[in-house]
Image (cartoon, rainbow, N blue to C red; front, side):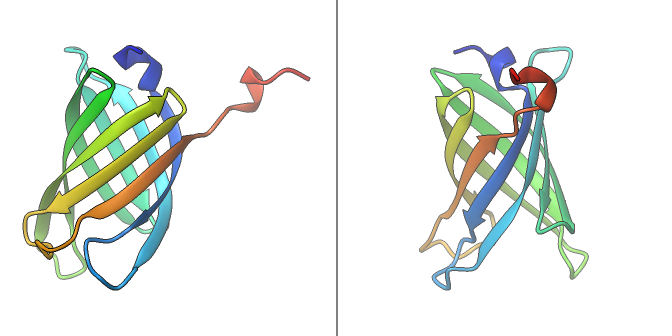
Length: 119
């Protein structure tokens, strides 16, 4: 698999970095910059925007991300995805100020555009 194959839109399901099973859904958009680095944009539960940059090697995608919380503080973390295929990413993540006893989890499924499907 190569980095260009990861570009696209993904629906995501995940759980937060706590022991409470706070689940979420959202959208992940992956694109490339001029240096072939990943640019990531998440929208979580239709409201929270997160951005990040990352790199890809040996079917592993690593993205450093940040976002502004409801309290107006900036939160930072890292997510690591195992690329099971170009259509399915299985990941775990941690934030700097998250509960160190837990990891967040996230699974991403490529959103296929209707123009790419056969009738």
